Image (cartoon, rainbow, N blue to C red):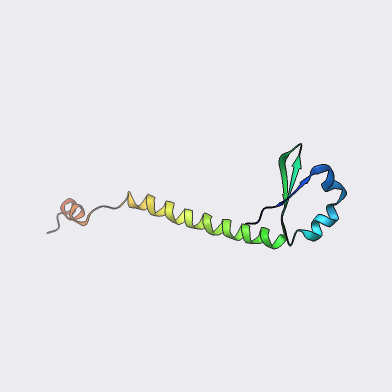
Length: 86
């Protein structure tokens, strides 16, 4: 990941159109009093990030579901003994 261009909030107001034009090439981190305040990224980058986040959420859900069902498993021998099967 490339280092974003750092821009003060007051400068960002003045050159917003220029920043939007250039954002396809480099992300922009807007600073307010020297602290990160906002990030301008290309729309395509945003869509890729959202898709990746959704994929990771799906993977986490699958993992959590497996963990929940692992606790519910009963050994076949125990089932046989409880119902009286040989």
